Amino acid sequence: MELLETLKKRALETLEKVADASGLAQWEIEIFGRKQGELTRLLRSLRDLPEAERRKIGAGANKLREKLEEELNKKRAFIKKQTTKRELLKEKVDITFPGTRHKRGHLHPLTQIRLTSEHIFTSLGFAIVEGPEIETEFYNFDALNMAGHSARDMQETFWLDKSIPGKNRYVPRTQVTGIQVRFMERHNPPFRIVYSGTCFRREATDASHEFQFDQLECLMVDKDITVANLKYILHAFFEKLFGKGVEIRLRPSYFPFTEPSFEVDITCIGCSGRGCSICKQSGWVELLGAGMVNQKVFKAAGYVPRQWQGFAFGMGLDRIAMMKYKIPDIRLFRQNDIRFLQQF
Ligand code: FA5
Image (tube, rainbow, N blue to C red; front, side, top):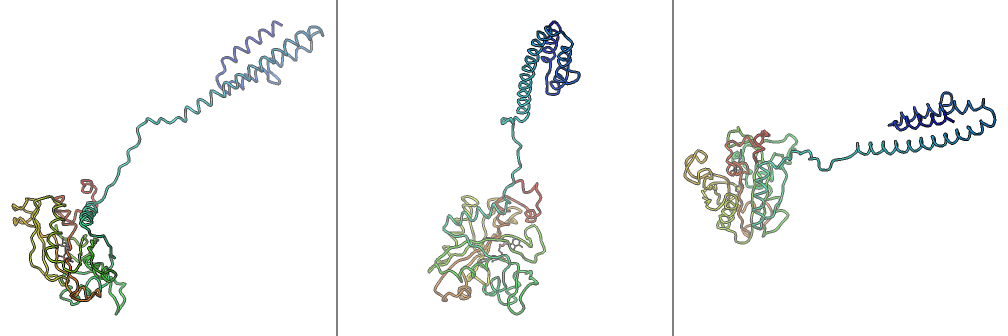
């Protein structure tokens, strides 16, 4: 009976110290192990005792076994709970931890200036329309009274190999003006539209000329549109874009698809008209071409001649952006230099 007590004491003490599942397995073997387990050995030794003693001690030993089993199960449950808790703690997410900041891109300055300009024109009642970047010779030139070679020489042109012989030649558009006839073939006046996109010309590039640049154009057609309407819309646009005080100036010019035609200048934003290197000391910068739609263009679109009047103007968005953001060289726009782009 004394042995039983000692075993109980020692077993419970060591069990107390067990801290994890492998320690518990080890303890289980030490006590209950089939060959060398301390309790097993003790139970086995009962066999050699006389009957009366065996019964007495046997009952005590069985009690001890039950007790130790009970304690073992308790400990097992405890360790399992501890392990689960530890695992859950490992999975814990700290929702107050600061996140990883991702760098956000932004719109290219040319896109920004296009969207701003479109917004101004839509606020003046113009609808946005579109046309293809690869244009036919007909829409880019012929329908715009530019059928002769000399008129075409105004714009250096790239031609595409995939042209259909004797039918139509394809050209990366040299101007967005071809959209005029495309639109008028399908719509009747009155209307005011704005359209924009990339144009391509065989240019030797310099600080203000690229072989690829963006144009934005407006066309307004009704019964009695005059140059006064053209001037009003242009002035309203530039005032909204550059602020009050900006003046515009129309100078006589020539475009085959307008009559009369004008070059339009605005007061230089760089020096407010006083004279600087941007405006070559003149106080004015030339930004666009404009005019009253030539009746030959209406005819090409299928309108009855002399029934309608309209104005059109086309500007280079790169040049407008250069003015707005004071950019000295047009070639910076398409070099994709992140140091340049990040400034907008
Ligand atoms: C035209 O392209 C006419 N279609 C404009 C027009 C439309 C006149 C409607 C009348 C009525 P021009 O070739 O001048 O015209 O070009 C218009 C604008 O595009 C120029 O004022 C300029 O801002 C821009 N531009 C022309 N060529 C280049 C180039 N190589 N690089 C950058 N911008 C250019």
